[in-house]
Each structure stands twice: as C-alpha cells, then as structure tokens.
Amino acid sequence: MNTLEKATFAAGCFWGVEHIFAKNFDIKTRVGFIGGKVENPSYKKVCTGETNHAEACQILYDPSKISYATLVEFFYKTHDASTLNRQGNDNGTQYRSAIFYHSEEQKRIAEEVTKKVQEKINKEKDIYSGDKIVTTIEEAGEFYDAEEMHQKYLDKVPNGYQCATHYIRW
Image (cartoon, rainbow, N blue to C red; front, side):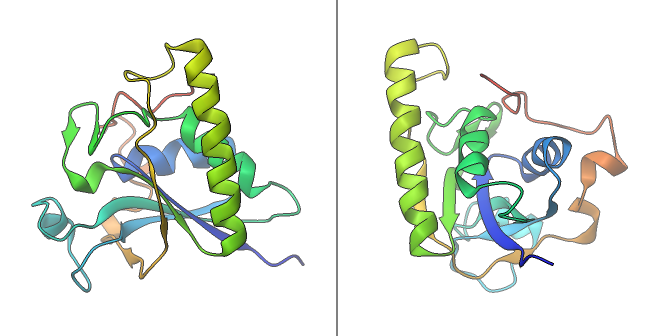
C-alpha cells in the first residue's frame, strides 16, 4: 500500500473547493482553517476576518495515482486566482487564494505550475477576471478541522450555497 500525501488549498468557500476536487479525483478530503493566528478557530470566528485563517480543503492523495502538479493545476482551473481575498460574492482574507505546501518539493512544484498558469493567462487573457495571479504559496502550518456540519457539506445539502467561481475553466 502506498503512503498517502497531503495537499492543502484555499480557493474561497471550502465547501465548493472540497466538492469539485472530490468529484474529479479519488482522494480523501476534509475542510478547515489554516494560515491564521488563533488556535482552534470556529467557523463563526474565522468569518469575522480577525483570525487571518483561510478556509481550506486538505486532501490526502496517492502520489502513484495522481501527481501533486496535477492537483495544483486543477486548483488553478477551478477558481479565479486573480482576485485578492475574494471569490465571487465571498469577500475577506478567509477566502484568499493560497497553496499551503507540506515540503520543499511541493513548494517547488507549486511555483513551477503557477508560472505556467500565469503564462497561459498572459496568452489567453479571458481565463480569470484579472490578468495577474494573486495566489500565495505558503508553508503549511497547523490545520484546524471545521465543524462536522461543514465536512462534505455539499453532499449533505446538494442545493446548498456554492460559490459561482468554482467550475473548471480549461
């Protein structure tokens, strides 16, 4: 049995991020908060914008079946990486676009894929609402699970709120 690896992405409302990844890959997911300054934050507290946490989806995947580069590219395909602290109607630092890397190899790959995607939007111009990627690439710190009601939320509530920016662009 292969060892699973971890990938963590923030791309707006974590429900939509989790849902689109889980629909397209054989992975395990959980949603929560990362990159902030408060221990064990609640959803309500993160929504105030005062904790500096991002809503994020943490993925466990088998690298023999899917590469980290594929996941990073998919991350860019499925949200607007040109909007600062915003996805659609969701505004605030908790909705920022960020890749949280778990190793130097992930950091290197994230930087390479980001550069390639930036080159793509420089040529095609209509992928995102803007023309410059604002995604941050940050070292992963402590990940705090969101409350159980938020885990696989869109499976539990199929007609629940989903950010309109979460769709496959190319």
